[in-house]
Amino acid sequence: MASKRGALIVLEGVDRAGKTTQCNKLVQALIERGRPAELMRFPDRSTTIGQLISAYLEKKSDLEDHTVHLLFSANRWELVPVMKKKLEQGITLVVDRYAFSGVAFTSAKPGFSLDWCMKPDEGLPKPDLVMFLQLNPAEAALRGQFGTERYETSAFQKAVHERFQQLMKDSSVNWKVIDASQNIEGVHNDITTHSLNVFNEAQNTPLGELWR
Ligand code: 2DT
Image 1 (cartoon, rainbow, N blue to C red):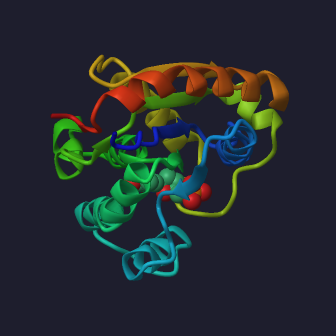
Image 2: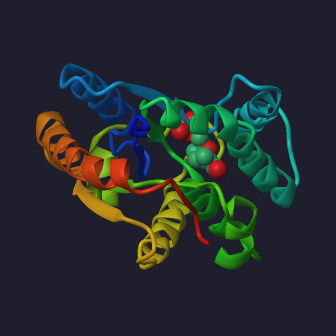
């Protein structure tokens, strides 16, 4: 019998919603339950493409808006062979941001349609579950100041949030909204429950293609 594939689980959300903390905690919780799991994050700043993106985010370089959108997408595509291999080996991937951030951030810029932004990511491995950590701007503000990277302003984050709401209307994606205003353990419990719930289905269905 072929061995069971891992699940592809993505966490998305606005700034300061606690994505990175929660991704780490989820990987730990899955491993403790005997399910091999690894963390990935996008952008992956370690590759050659990732370094171009990182310099752009740190405002050390400027890139034309379409160009940087395509680089973010290329950064996902270059990791697809690795992702597929790990999933086939039965490893569950917990991914900190994915194509949804790609579309939400670029389409928050003037002149970019959701459709145009989605095209380059069409056909990527489709997540079995996408959890959106929901936090309203007032609560996010209580968690401290924005950082200094590109996109870290309240006006831009508000536009990004609106784009995420539009993306979540797409029922072809298994979205779950998580109330990120709870304490860390409360959020973690919700995330773990949803994740454990997708395992059966993920193991019995082939990996899908995003937005196809
Ligand atoms: P962090 O490394 O702090 O998560 O910030 N972004 C991300 C895009 O504009 N497009 C994408 O495809 C992705 C994955 C979100 C990364 C910043 O880059 C933005 C915040």
